[in-house]
Image (tube, rainbow, N blue to C red; front, side):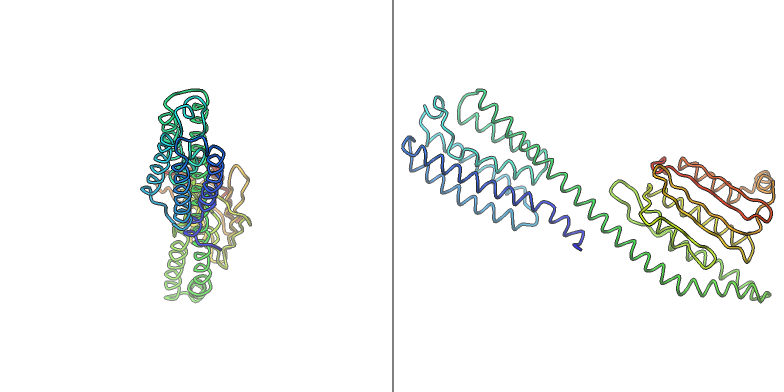
Length: 382
């Protein structure tokens, strides 16, 4: 797979090739026009010299545009100047009647449209429109009058510049989105690799120390609590590492939740990315960690927990359920009345800021279940 840098670099190559091909084709047309009117010009020799110069410039510009990874603005302006100069030479080649009455094509004829495409590819819609306007203005100036045909040429030149510029801008944006997606994919893969490594080594040891220490009791129980604290902290650190968001500020929620899985905590997520606003992904991961830490503190030593992430299209649902001792009726209300807001108030407050809802189901001996629903396009985090 190509690197993100290569993707951005190659985004405009097809357009540059098209501009070079357009220049060659239009040069052939211009040469044919000169051949057809060779005996009618005021200076046939100058006409052929001009065609020869155009051929040389066609080769030079094609080589430059196709080989350079970044086209300099000064060179495109030079290209524009050369095309305008060639148009001005037509006043020396064509007779007055050919310019004003017979309306014989200028020596470069449609060859100058290639520079409009060049400006559009290099500088987008603005560049294409400006280059098209300049060429059209010189067309008016060389002819020395205005009419419907010249105005039609003006509209076509500006229109071509705008459309090609739009295509160039779209290609750049698409390439940037693809490059960003590739970076995010690489970051996610690396993060998941590190998470698996930590899970299979450090976290497993800490979990074993915590479990065995609680079984032994005494000073070992104190070590078990310290091991449990460090396990939670390390898991939170891995889960909180920033993930690269997409171009529209979204992030895949799954890696942030998957890293929280342990022998006690099982995590189930969809097979496809769950894209939510980046801030919402961080908040939801924090809420799940809070709920799991609450299980660790209060649900009992043998309690297990299950985390489920569901993508319903218009909203994402995150459920955290445990089989612990549960919460007695009125206990949360009593804690709030005493000024101890606790995890329940914290979860509800954070979910409300995301424009979602949080539902708690619990009871003595029934375990605890949180169900958090957040809109896919929820309110922005502050």
